[in-house]
Structures are given as C-alpha cells and as structure tokens.
Image (tube, rainbow, N blue to C red; front, side, top):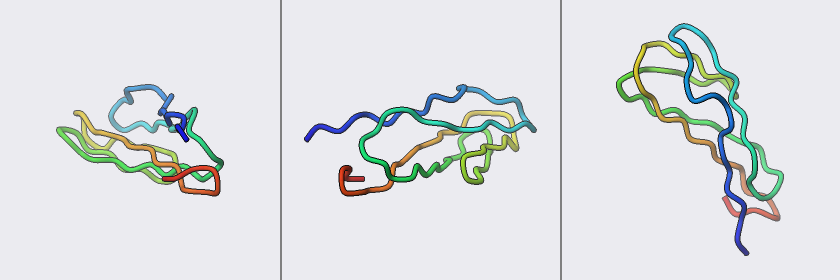
Length: 73
C-alpha cells in the first residue's frame, strides 16, 4: 500500500546558539519519530526532538518513523 509522506513541519531556520523543537506531520503508522542531523557548512546536534545550532551555516535534518504493524520504515 502507498504510505503517507512524513514531513518535518518545524521552522526551516534557527539562530546560532538557540534551539528548535522539531515536529512532523503525516507518515503512516504510529511508530516513534527519530531525527538525525548531517552537518554541512554549519553544525548542530539533536537531543530527542530538540535541535541546537552550534555554528552558523547549513545542516540537513532527516526524520524517520519507526516501523510498526501498519508502516514499513
């Protein structure tokens, strides 16, 4: 079956030294959402669903929903 897209619906930017609480919408199933960050020209870390900007620049955040009976990760 076709699965719904999982979309990060938080703000697209955060000021250096501040935090951003990440959230998603959509996605099939009820599995927990996990976030990962890939540093680019900037640096950031994620703790749970809170992103902290450590250096100005660009980073990429990916959200993945855990597999469950109704959703294939």
